[in-house]
Image (cartoon, rainbow, N blue to C red; front, side, top):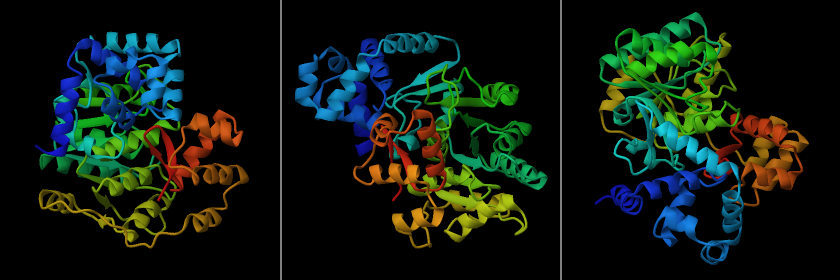
Length: 388
């Protein structure tokens, strides 16, 4: 039995009742408690329900001090009961699925990444989550040629048996979904909001079409509005479910580059479509190509690469030291304060960073998003960490 199969068997055996599944949902909603934290809880408690039934003294005895304090504080939040009940009711609706890491339909490739979501909310066909997928991402302000390229690649990839996965955003994402749908193809949209809060609103009709011919997916509770910090987290799911990620057009600071970076870290293939040197929306793709992404000008090149033995994409560009990257990007004093705090530990939850740095949550969130776009930090289970 593989390590992954053994872990799923362990999950299934200790979360085999409705009570334990409800307990898992409740624990997953505690801020800073991701799947890795849940794994560590199940290493010392026989089930999620046993964690909830433990008193504060037992939690402090069996868990590290900071982890125990975070868990105790989180479980005392009065909103937790209401949110848990809302999710369990949502789960009962027709064609709505709540997937746990031990669920048969949970995407197997997602379990291989560093920080798999402990819950996945699905509207549509969950069986598509384990099909061969290619992620297609790119600029929110693409050129007409970029739009046409996205549609052509999506159509061709469908014809070769791939599911097209993207993020429902304006621009290249939307064109990729539309391209697949135009030829009756399957497509998956991963959201940076809850499934009952479609964003952007102008893609509400597109989301409905995707549900009919694929699925929309999110790790966030159904009524969660979009937030800047949600989109990098969404991006790791887009790349994590896919065999490879294709960047069609991207500016120098495009969020699509975060998706490509996640793909590289996850050992997945990265492809980029080149463009004119006079096109600002091609700069990001050219950066990726210089860093080792495969230059593609025809869908068959992706098909040939993915249908052969899968390799790990490596970067040919020497890594800069953190201090050099900070100097090169002319970070503000507040951004330096955040990076200095993160350099002392493996990761911090944003709430902890707010206490340490003295920065207000709203401005801190914006700065974290900017630092992630610059490649200085990354989202990890329970918070953020420095990018290696």
